[in-house]
Amino acid sequence: MKEHKAAFEAAFFSTAALWMSPWKDKAEYRVLESQAKASAKVLSLSFEELERTQRQDDLQQVLLQGTEELQCLARELETTHDSLLSDCFRLGMHCGNLLGAAVCGSHLPALDTVLPQYIDNIQHTKSSLPTSPPALEEIIDLPPNAISFNSLIPLVQKVAEWFATCNMSKSPHVFLSYAEEESLIAKMIANRLKSEGISCWLYERDSEPGEPHLIQTGRIIDGCKVLVAIVSEHSLKSEFVAVEIFRGYEKGKAFLPVLVGLTNAEFVSKRPKWLLALGFSTTIQWTDPQEVLDRIVSGLRRML
Image (tube, rainbow, N blue to C red):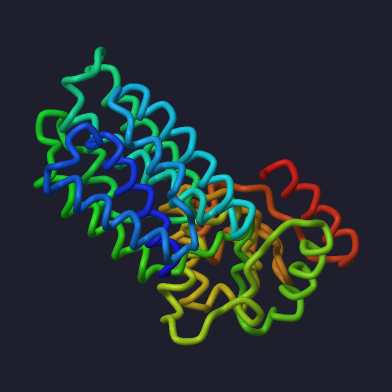
């Protein structure tokens, strides 16, 4: 989305400009500064303090004070918008530091330890996002001696464009996989989880028009923690449910199977491959709804 792209770019270009501040007459610095201001306007961020910081001559002091100011801007985004936008901003900071350290780092001691630290920062922030741009892996995999304006800027542009088009909404804790015939049970589970403060994704309630079904469910499964599978005669015949279960298996998700109208023995005999995908997770038999819902909540609290 536009805001996520702007947050990433504002932080990247302004951080890289901090590193280049001793060489303000260079064309690269003017490009970085111009791009940073343009992105900041989208988010109504003020860079006045940052500009004052950049007027100093001591690079280490500029970086120290500039980083503090950028962290303040990140916290401001978290307060006025959300933590996701703040994470995009921090990711841009770390990528900007990586570029700056590689291009200008010969002016600072211990460069060999600085570059790996910035890579670690990128990986750490990437892990906090519900999903992340493929180009980030290319940035992370760049050898230190290959990081330059020419190598990094195209990858940064790929990351920014990905942010502009990807739906970056936070993924729920739980994905509910079920056949249409069990939608009433799924809604009961979803309503109970909501009342317990456990976020979940229910197709009838949370699906977004315009995005293909398999792409949308795949994205949500990738970001969730647990897949609750309602296993019934209907779901055993559903290709969509099968795709969702194996997607969860491929992504290493935890499973909580709820058996409806089936015994465990019947489930195992009819779909042995599903049992393998579910990792021999302990199943819950749908009997008394209130008792089962209590068990589901209790199980999820241990798994999340």
